[in-house]
View 1 (cartoon, rainbow, N blue to C red):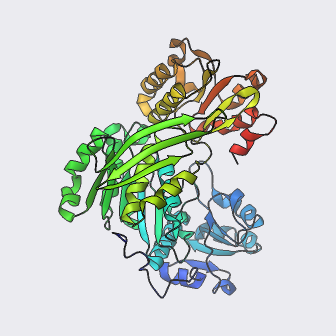
View 2 (cartoon, rainbow, N blue to C red):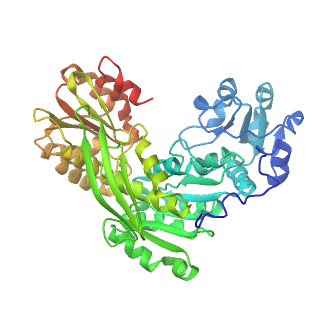
View 3 (tube, helix red, strand yellow):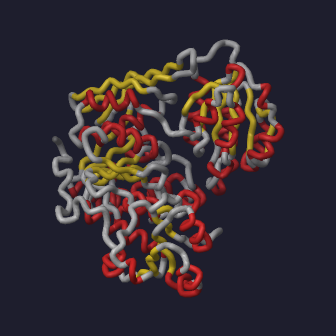
Length: 498
């Protein structure tokens, strides 16, 4: 079965138990609970930090943030179906009469987020699955979903349904983990030093993946060396057995060869697997992208490692997904998955909305939905994909690009570089102040708007025809709101974002 032969060796006394009671949670972690009659109530599996999306019968975590305080939404969360609320004890005491009238149980702690993390750590210890942690500047979510799709037929696999990649997000993923989970797949994001270190300390990963190192979150990480250091924190997991990394990235490869922190991996016997197009332990080759006449894409990839070979065809658009697929293959074969099973999973894989889906728009337009987020590396790749896309001769190639956030002092330079590449297109529409002076240096730019709302009010969507449109930008700009406006009579664009 391979290196994951001990899958499923969690605590046998806990296996099958959904979770512990409020009394057990309080006794284990020093929490209080209310009311007393809820002592034997099971803590829910599904917790949300957004009152609008709580599940009926689930839980709500009231987080005091920099801009908003979730404690003000407790009543709304209960109305929407939450039966258990984690909140700060001090807030509960101040509003006890009002909160006592709600039909919900309360876990009371000094800090709500910290309480959720403690509960999640206990949950992980109860079940003790193998834990895969995926980090990197791009490709985390798609790699996670590739791996989930590959493993779920062979193992009881659990992963976040969204990009829950902060410490709190990881905690909510773990809290939602079924009691019989064998493999847990975590996505590890960061925008400041120490975040991944703290996460893997509390939620130790056995297999780590670093997909890429590039300019992203520079506001908090400073420069590319800061990004590298932050992602390399994954090797500080005390249970790490294997690290798969992007061997085509010289900066990352050099760091892996040096291995900071006392060269822990070399001396600790942790396996290293380079993933890339050349000089790699797992080699990617024969990559071919096609797009059919109905804008239906196919990505062909061959993956080879120590005498093993998987020849995959996947209904994806974007050559970058070959590497995401390869990282998933690296972990999957360690888990004992055979090549044919991986090939079948690749053939059925579907991208999440916002990550490269193509659909038909009105008047024979093709819409490339890259609206989820953007950084310099992912935007450059998306523009290259559009330039290389197989299209009828009469089609124009157009990009609608939102600004890229969290780039710090490097923002003007990186936006100018991005726009110089996009200027090879037939037209570029820009949204966001980040584009600044760069917008005036390109003949391809057809206009700049401060936000998506102003663009939507001025752009003539009825004039769209015989064009391929790339939509991409940072989450801040909500670029996905443009998609329904490109829809044809069948409403395909609107469906793509559900």
